[in-house]
Amino acid sequence: MGRLRASGLVSHVMRATYPGPQPGFSAFQVIKALLTIGSRKLIGRKLLADEIGLGPGAVRTLVQRLSAARLVASTPSGCRLTSKGLALYEELAGSIRMKPIRTGRLAVDRHSVAIRIRDAAGSVRRGLEQRDAAVRAGATGATTLLFQQGRFTIPGESLDCEEEFPDPLWRTLIRDFEPQDGDVFVVSSAPTLRVAEEGAIAASLDLLEVQSG
Image 1 (cartoon, rainbow, N blue to C red):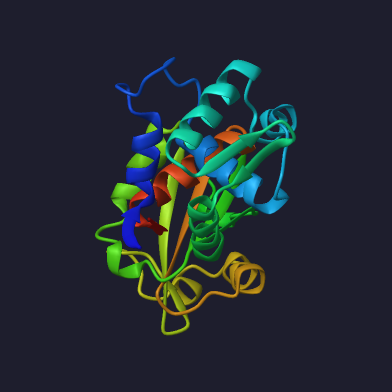
Image 2: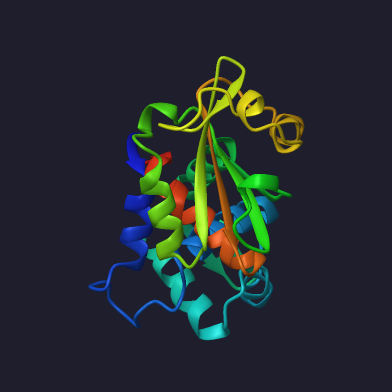
């Protein structure tokens, strides 16, 4: 198996030259569909549409494109992952974890989520790239955090967030995510929870490396 960046996978599924209708779904929904199908083992299109927030036409197009990429098999009983899709799902599930949080001083809008990307610190440059990607996806803003030597840092701004910016957030992230040295967190904020999630996924795509055949 070779290495493929998740951003490349999403571009492949969403690209404008792909045969068939133009996509009515986001990068967030591509990733969420893979995670949902993988966790459910087998799921009907209607329930999948409800889970990821798509209409019947858009979810049909998404499943067709995932099937063309040999990631999903569509059967009369529902959708399931192929062996290639399962390998991708296991890599994604092991790499990322996302949940809503109370962000304290990092909050820039009503709803915020944190996403942890395992062992991705080497891919972070200034952290502004993740913020810009989140904003393009509709988020109000995003902050990139590195977890190194047992401390949260912000590239170019803070070498020890807990000491410089006292806030319960840092203990919450450690309790809820059990980070390891080299992990990256992106905290995304938006007017709605779904948009905050979309921003977090968009911000994370360039940092994610997943297995693909």
